[in-house]
Length: 214
Ligand SMILES: C[S@@+](CC[C@H](N)C(=O)[O-])C[C@H]1O[C@@H](n2cnc3c(N)ncnc32)[C@H](O)[C@@H]1O
Image (cartoon, rainbow, N blue to C red; front, side):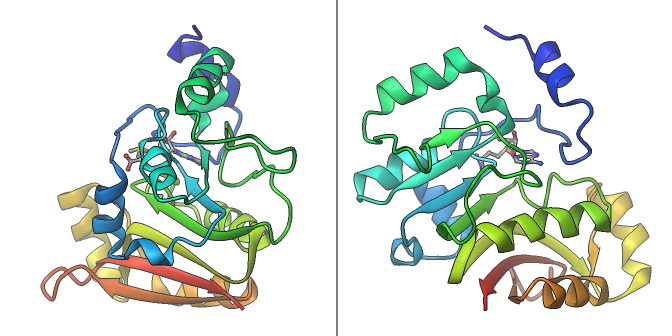
């Protein structure tokens, strides 16, 4: 079994990975609750960006006949991958898109326009370093692999229109919010429409992000 230190060694040169050691295992229902969507939005193939090593969302989706491709840097571990594939048995690997693999969101080994739906819960862009070049790179990969009219659902997403909020949020939540004016340009350049749904009236800076590829 590969040790965490070896894992970090492998990816230490990559600036697209941050905080990947913290793993959670939300199930299918918890994903839908977080993303505020119903299962009919999950048009196959679905890419779970930052799945966690156990691919729990993919297993729940498989029960409904939804094909999920899981991506998480932790799936680098070959033995772990083999175990997951053999006991998931709901998935059959095809040659074009394996059901799960290790990758970073900024470097996706998937074909152009090959994914109909992307989901990411507490992963992208939450775990990205606060760097707009990284954000652009990651969302350009997302735009590349997403099929036209495909959707991406992300939670949580922290945004601000007020520079003054930035320091307050950093102090209280430790999370850097993204400036909406910068994102407008990035999404427009990438041909992505986007929609933000605040999670409550009071906490308007934490939202769900929905993107649509034009
Ligand atoms: C907090 S866990 C969330 C796991 C799962 N989505 C859930 O909600 O239970 C964050 C996940 O994002 C992955 N991750 C972090 N940075 C990533 C990146 N740059 N590209 C792809 N996955 C990343 C981590 O490896 C981990 O699987």
